[in-house]
Each structure stands twice: as C-alpha cells, then as structure tokens.
Image: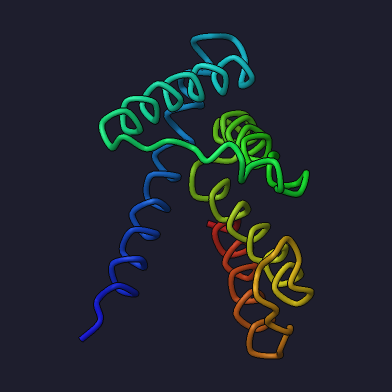
Length: 149
C-alpha cells in the first residue's frame, strides 16, 4: 500500500494546526512590539533562521541557474506569507482565533477554485464544478456559524 498520500495529508493537517498556533502567537507578539508588522518581521526572522539551520543540516543548495528561468510570480511567496502573518496578528485580537482562521481558509478556498479552474500559476487545471463550489460554500457557511457563536 502506498502511504505517501496519507503522509502528505497528515503533514498538511499538522501545518494547518501550526497556522492556528501561529495566529495567536503573533498576535501576542504584536501587542508586545506595538505592531502586527513588527511581529511579522520578527516571526519571519525567526523562521528564516530556522530554515537556514535546517538547510545547513540537510546540505541543501539552491540551483541558481534554474532560478533564472522562473516567472516573476515565483518570487512573491514570501510576500503572500507576510500579508497572511500581518493580517492574522492584527485580526486575532479583534475577531478571535477561530473566526480569523475560518475566514482565512474561506479566502484560500475561494481563490483556490479560481486558480484550479484556469490552471493559473502552473497548477494542473481542474474546472469548477457544482460539488467543488458546494464544498467551498460549506466552509463559507462555517464562517457564518463560527461568527454566530
């Protein structure tokens, strides 16, 4: 039996859990350093240091020749992450962790449907279907339920 897909799913679920931890952690940091932008900067500095240590341990080296052929959008992942961290650090004290994460997941899913439908940014094309829209609609309904409390 091929366990690779299950291991990938578990890794993503754990990463999602880390996202739920990251939001209140950075919100607390933002209070201490007087800004969600300052908190995001510190968060990314710590993350960069951790990644540097892991890369050194694993002896990974980037293929700089391959980077020359990348499309411009391939360099913006860190920017998207910074927006995510600042928004979460700002929103958690105002909305709570559950509402913040639920809204973020809803936003991720809505844009994911569009990216998949058009095969944008190099992802495989997967057309929008009624069942996929229904799945996202259930998450959006979840936002309303979480908000209602």
